[in-house]
Length: 242
Image (cartoon, helix red, strand yellow):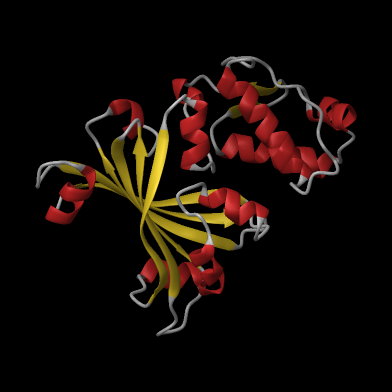
């Protein structure tokens, strides 16, 4: 594994988690391979036991590794480990797969129409708005996803950012918000309305996937909710979102 950069602002446990994840995704670590023990990782990287355990716990939750009592941790036996799962940006996922990626902004600004999910997630009082970033995400020139992110209204400065690029890069580097944990709220099949069909270049009534998710930082504090409407006629791209 590569060296951990202790001068990096990214928390050590997240650096370790991401390095192991990268080696699994790239095939350096294969399904069934044994992960170095927590003691070995502590010694190799000069980390505390808690730091290593936090990294390993998140890898287990995300399905990258399994723990076998008395034997250690192993790379999970799953083809899905070759896909970009976990809390990564669409931009990063596309680059990892060699995809020509583009985004266009449909809407950015405060939004007063707040869902019950947003009220619960952000702890909003009646009448409080959210910051909305709505985009079309394309891969190889094909409209793939209508993505609507809702964030704290305190992030209104996002209006001044280049949101055709990675939102996560902006959140991490400018606002020091590190997406770390996600919780899927719902995934369902719906039928494309006229607006959805126009945006995704589909026929009205075509089945599409609608998913909603909440994303938290490493401390469990809310970062954003996101609703994706994903075209389901391209298996290579669709499986990123299910």
